[in-house]
Amino acid sequence: MTTTAHALPLWIAGEPHEGTTVIERENPARPGEVVGAVAAGDARLTTIAIDAAHAAFPAWAARPVAERVRRVRDAIAQASADNPARSRLLARELGKVAPDALGELGFAAAFADFAAPVAERISADVVVEDAEGRLVIVKEPFGVIAAITPWNAPVILAALKVVPALMTGNTMVLKPSPLAPLAVTDFLSAVAAELPAGVLNVVNGGADVGETLVSDPRVAKITFTGGLPTAQAIAASAARRVTPTVMELGGNDAAIFLRDAEYTEAMYTRAVFGAFLTSGQVCMAIKRIFVPRERHDEFVAGFRAAAESVLRVGDPLEPGVTMGPVVSRDHQERLRGLIESAEAAGGIRYELGRWDVEPDAADGYWVRPTLVTGLTDEHPLVADEQFGPVVPVLVYDDEDEVVRRANAVDQSLASSVWSTDPAHAEAIARRLDVGFTFLNCANRAGTSLRAPFGGRGLSGHGREFGELGVGEYLQTHSINYPAAVRTGEAAGNAYPVPAS
Ligand code: NAD
Image 1: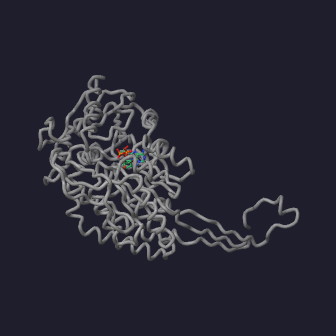
Image 2: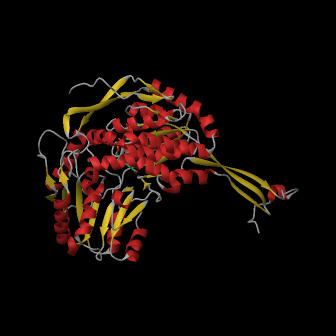
Image 3: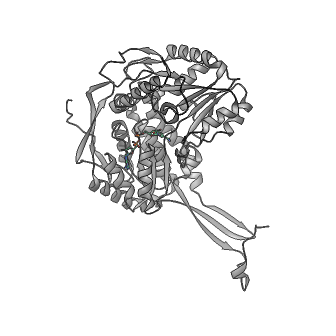
């Protein structure tokens, strides 16, 4: 590997900061090529960043919400001016195709526009004055928020935390993933530079930086997006001070094609993108496909034809390419291992799409987009989140059965139901034990800024997007002044009753 002279600095207390080491990021489409580097911190620098966020909190929280909202929105709009160049960086460090990378960067401004009026509205006191007396519910920020993000959508997943947390008066230290730190660090540093010193701090690094961050007693809330083992380590650390958490973890999203689904080219095309966007490395991507037994052959043929037409695998910067490599050699090896084990277990493999590159070449972390049929629900490709471009197709006979099997996994994030009858689709959706169900679509195409997103069980808790996602960063303080305070014996014995 060649070395780079320039590493993007940490951003602490309103200034660029040198790190103790450097993280170089390779291009997964051409691993010999270094895309760039970021400075990485250690426990000492992480603590300095928390000092800065802690010191900045009282003054930032004291500013009127309208001013905070305006400043965050303006800072993001200003930082977004460099998005075209930054999107090339994102495409090269992550393997995400260029239009997708540009869209990802644009999401931050769109989400800030959505969150601005919401943050203003829900930050206001709720005041009730009636026969029972006067109740004031005060909405307050928590303080210092520790944010830890993954690599697969580094800017979107950071924006979902930074925007609402700062608008509602918190300050933040954010640690990006070492697997895609470049574009997000460049973007957030530009945002932070427009805000008062210490309001937003960015410290790159690995698990050691993350552990220091979440175990600091001054951290008032932790917001994490990533995998289950990391969430468990963070939760154990948070337990010491019962620090509240938002946990956005993995999913094993079922796509249930009902007998009355469309089975048209348009449907198959939506399903292909639902499964293979960003090489399947999306928490809300289709991870398991369920089709009625008698539709199996038709489905596989229709899906393969749509993939042939819309899935072109190659260098993410090439125009017309719709799928790039996976993020790392480790991930490539894990996914290829899953495909081999699926074949060994009797699965039938269908390779999909068209190729600009030689997928088996040693250079580049390519994984052929693949459908696998004939597996049992116990095979790891079905039972666990694969997080890559390899998707099992499973057959079912009746709806009770498919609902039971869709629900019989540990990770319950999202799902999709496909039907021409909206009432039928909704009835099935209501029986799924998940936090989000897409109807007749899946993945990014079906999301909405206003729709709360998040998981259940081992997919986590708390929400992002929507008013609930903004509200995660406010806590309440009730100030209650009863009109008639219960006196005498009743002071000790009387229970509240509803106001008449
Ligand atoms: P990961 O858990 O390996 O890493 C996530 C972050 O945690 C990284 O910044 C990493 O450096 C940090 N980290 C690692 N060990 C730590 C520790 N001990 N203490 C504190 N921080 C630590 O996850 P990943 O591989 O980057 O991301 C992929 C996972 O994220 C998938 O399971 C995916 O489904 C999930 N995800 C979920 C959502 C959602 O909204 N629910 C969105 C995107 C991705």
